[in-house]
Length: 290
Image 1: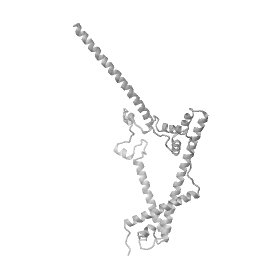
Image 2: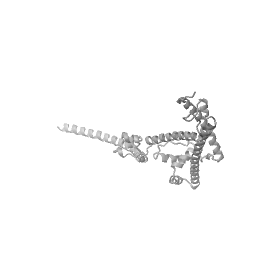
Image 3: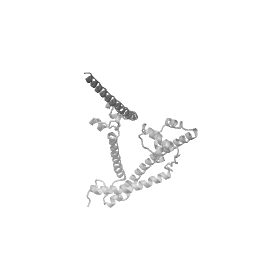
Image 4: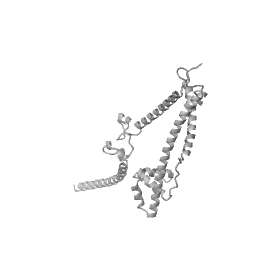
């Protein structure tokens, strides 16, 4: 007697097959990386005398006013990635100008090593991602279609749950039918993932020129970074996320101005006290004259 497989049976079978596919995909990816000699780049240790200067350059780029708290405790690989993305040739040139030619050469060599490693690391990440995707696609076809076709139209998960695929007429499906079924399911699964990713970008990562998300646009709100200078601007609508370094400078100037204002208030209070004393003395003198 045949009955339609209930959702729980199909879900458990899917989980079992997913675990098997994930493990086999991992092994196939490692094999392909070895066959094609794709190796993860190794990074030589940064010169310990140069590393603090690299961290200093990174901090200056992250925060012009020195609010960044990166220290030399971060790994050399992290320093290399920061240098690749943040440190430009002009910054390196200005730093080298403070030292003699020998030490400047060491700085330049360290920067070049960092950039080379970061570039190779990104290339390795892209290559391994492509290999993993292709491995997953190959295993999907082999496991669900080839194995499923020759193994009573079942997979390991389906066999354990005692379910299988058949046509609406109750006959065994053809190879083309199985491939179409699984590729459509695979495609829909990835389309849903892409849609979720796009929704995340639209609502969380700002994609408009003024960095306002769709939700902010509809609710007439905006996301800002808390900064005293920004909050004390005369016109808050002039705030722009591109003015972060300018705001940091304003914040520093604002703190300086606060100190000057305090000093001015103290002087002003003293003047008021002196003025009150003079007035009182004048009044007393006038009373004596009378």
